[in-house]
Length: 289
Ligand code: UTP
Image 1: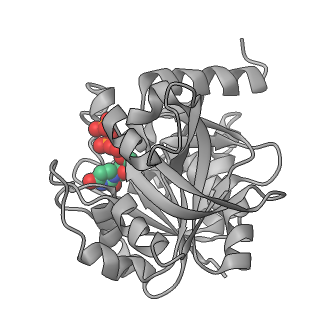
Image 2: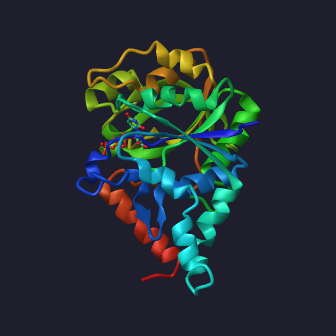
């Protein structure tokens, strides 16, 4: 059973400055809903009700969003605008929200380790709210839980990314173990490779001039709790960040990571281009033009 979902949401969001100077990136809206609300919805549809959020300085809006707002509620009560609050109120009723602050932004791996006190000793889901996914069937977290139930090890979500964009992502290599469910046993991983790294990573098996795409990690995971001990012992990279990819690689070397190629569309809302694409996609879906 996966009961808890961790949302690392402490990053600076520098690519969205100045918007993110006082507003958390995870609270930027796609139409009327903040990114993080989409993430919580995805967790709820995967039958997870315990939301564990890693926040940081200047991120108080997140806690206020998932709480009652008595003044606003009483102002709107009995008016024609009352329904605007229905959706978020219903969500708050269904879930519990706990928070911990990351005091130093030392990377995603460090943010996940900071969440340990909220998770404890059980497997858990991770959603990076700035990777927004829209699936016609099961949400990505539900897809990953299905794979976790079969293999009982860490599961990462992947998609094909063109070679030209690969420097922004983590790449994986591995063997297909279930063609029907697009599942791979992960053998190797590399965070944000440059072309030199890719040649090394591919061990000359891939002709980079011909390889149109690589399997890249996106912001959805199921992690087994031994990841915390591994993260505690990971050294920071040259930018001073602790990478989740390094911890997952340690599990992968023991054959304990599988990757699932997601069914659905993902938008990189951590970049302005991806954010705009997401807004256009959801506007079209809602018939707004
Ligand atoms: P990003 O790599 O997108 O970093 O983090 P960022 O700081 O949010 O954005 P830029 O690159 O400065 O524009 C991916 C996810 O990990 C979280 C972020 O909040 C985001 O959800 N994160 C990152 C943390 O919680 N803590 C960190 O130290 C770093």
